Image 1 (cartoon, rainbow, N blue to C red):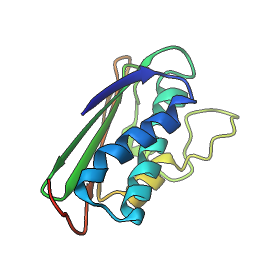
Image 2 (cartoon, rainbow, N blue to C red; image 1 turned 45 degrees about the vertical axis):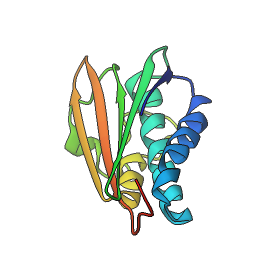
Image 3 (cartoon, rainbow, N blue to C red; image 1 turned 90 degrees about the horizontal axis):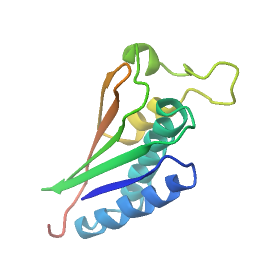
Image 4 (cartoon, one colour; image 1 turned 120 degrees about the horizontal axis):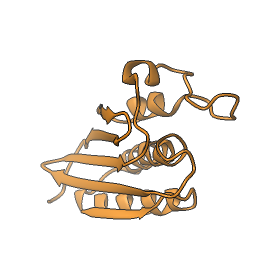
Length: 139
């Protein structure tokens, strides 16, 4: 599944619903759906706030499901991340003096089984997250 949308904060909820609907065929638990929705929300919000710095841009989501594993990638063509390790530290926020908590990556890591971040300054960022579901009715 591929989805592209404008980098407006109101589209974060849309992204959550679309990914949750895509997961439905895997017969996930409510907790598994909530975990993925929370992680997607954090990744999309990061793309909008940090990647595009609240300017116009396109956020892209790609989701795959296979054998009880849900993989979701969130991509932006924004400013990129200079130091990924530092950006993933709890409480670190690239927004100076803002109201951001710096917990986005921490939440993603807490709710997903794997989180991988690839970024190039001036070219954008891709966050790929994996969730292994406890049971799968059918694919």
